[in-house]
Image (tube, rainbow, N blue to C red; front, side):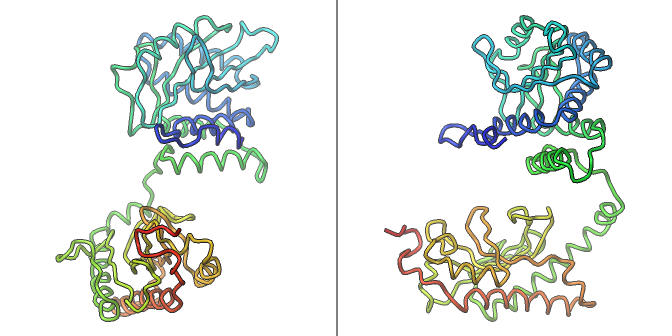
Length: 383
């Protein structure tokens, strides 16, 4: 599994994300036959809904094969399947009689993750798959709903299906897995990966989501008020280094404010203090929610937290509740979720709590500055 996942390394000329998506999917499918069968059935079910007149006979025949043999079929998984000088992303071969390949079901899947279709590859696949030993065969394009391929690049005989729909269908078709089993873990991890890649279906509207929409404007007004008060109080202690909106502060979700670290601490090498209300998506264990953040942000080539010589200093900061985070800049941040303010019952008390937390975080991280003498000034790499 790990060999598959790292097979395509990052290079300066290509983004391997699409190939890694294919390999990770294949790695789990080949070790989980019930999931592979459910995935194939989901592909074909969605293809039947999207198929043009030219594609329907192939899809209908493939689904009929599954009805007759699919529950117990052996599944072979191939990636980068070379045929006629072409490379098929994902090949699914289902067998009900392992000794007779001429009775197999063959599904070739062109997996897309933002890239377009290359030239006449799909037309070539339609021709090449006819030469494969098998009773039924079909070619399908699997793409994210948010970035479908151009209709001009897809032959009428090739249906396009979307990851979100296929995964929802797959989850419905997958038989219950024994709790705590290796197969249950594989499914959980694979679907978590798909979630991170933005390929899982959106959750349905719930009472919680409906209520959150109903009070969205009121919540944002409260957030604006909190950010404004906290900003004023932090400015009384730490010098202004800029904030979202410049001279006209844009308080609310997404707000950020920077503050300079005292010049008496040149070892910070241009680092700055920062707080705000940001998405926690950069956090290792993020919830996909907004959170108040506070801590220090470093220049990329003068990052104390990433320098091995400051291991002990970093360990002490981690013990204080800071986390290493990198989105554009490397940071040492702490997170404070809005619900943590609910221990106070009035707006003023909540503002006091939040301002106190930001100031405490700034005080904690600046009380013991690292020795960055060997790093030089910001923008200069250590020799």
